[in-house]
Amino acid sequence: MSDIKLAQSVTSEQKADRRSRPYSDDQRHTAQELANRARLLISCPDQPGIVAAIAQFLYQRGANIVQMDQYSAPPDVGLFFTRVEFDLPSMLQRLPELERAFVPVADAFQMEWRLAPACVPKRAAIFVSKEDHCLLELLWQWQTGDLFMDLAMVISNHPDARETVESLGVPFYHVPVDRDRKPQAEAKQLALLAGQVDVVILARYMQILSPEFVGRFPNRIINIHHSFLPAFVGRNPYGRAYNRGVKLIGATAHYVTDELDEGPIIEQDVHRVDHRATVADLKRIGRHVERVVLARAVKWHLEDRILIHDNKTIVFA
Image 1 (spheres, rainbow, N blue to C red):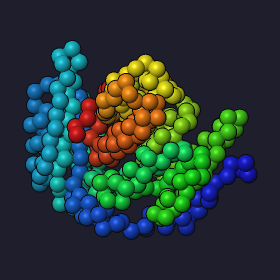
Image 2 (image 1 turned 135 degrees about the horizontal axis):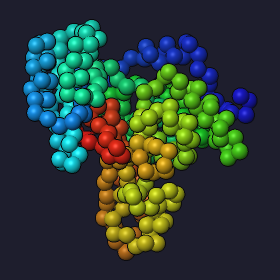
Image 3 (image 1 turned 45 degrees about the vertical axis):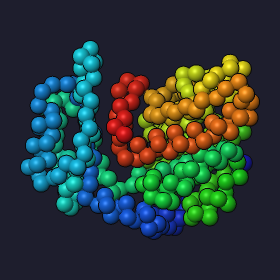
């Protein structure tokens, strides 16, 4: 414990303080708007009657559908995906009964499904190293209510962001990661996260997570890679892009799996460059793309807009 320098230990008092921390005005407005809203995400074999069954089920319980997106995959895949957002009075109190009642419908259509209350923000942890541009974008959008989440903590292998993070009332934990002591560092990180977060955001956290770590949060770790994958996987993508003479640079937000930079892609974007651009130019331009792409991906995850099939995502943005 002594050679892992935590900024502070997690006490029951600190946990209670985080849970009771008041929303900003923007966050409170978002919570009020979503008070009776829920989201139903479904994937199942494609067949007639699915939409009708869902709509009839919700209608019978007095729900009002406010948005419905759907996608039928090609016949060789034969799958149907949908996201239904609806309002229902006293939704939180009625959610357990709603889940039980939906089971026969789900069984009839062989659905994989989940029902999520929109008014309960997902608990998030942000991991960051020295570069803070993605972290700052997330913090700003969180403050304005554009990212509706409970920001539980920021963890970093460097102390640089402490003042920025703690000034917002968010716990900051400095966990150095030495090559020879990486398992011990991950153990401390996992102890901090245990039972406290629903999603982990890697905001240019320049460390490779172990399979054990990834396995604790399947499809719940979002990474930003400073390249338009699958090009330039791994380290120093801007330097390799420069050597290759690319005319487009980009960034990719994806879920983390055991395979480096191979997880399901959530969002990508690009920026045009030319022969005049130096490596420093590519990095400067790329930082803007990275922070925008990561924030979009995080927002879509928080709003339950992503369904995963095999190693691909269906994003109802």
